[in-house]
Image (cartoon, rainbow, N blue to C red; front, side, top):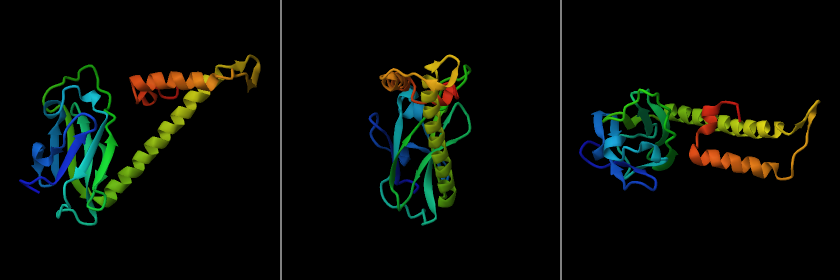
Length: 192
């Protein structure tokens, strides 16, 4: 793949395709893109990325693929998805991790990484992503339950008296928070 365009990323609604030639190749199987320098310093505005192959990659066998990761402020790499010769494109949510008050936006602080890895390992990571989605769904349900719980009748632990538009009110409140921070449930724990 050295010297030729084989894969690319595109930040959905924000960028044109950025080929692997714009990435820094750190070794034969790893590439890194400095997002704050090569795309935008406003990295939080980047919500989704498409990783795609421009052609089949001979270095990838039926048992290997390209994994996509991100790192913020030198934190460990966080998996986001993969593509392979059999599955050549995928749109992935970025879900930038939280950073502490000491985070400084400088070159190298916001990175996107691509690596060639065994397909079996990437499929295991996909299973972990599914568990994360299940956890998110559970937190949505807890949020709804906590909201409904506020309508319980004093002294009657098993009864709720809900206004007919209670679900609509909860959904509007949920949507307002979601628009401000799509990951708000993961930050709030089980508070709802």
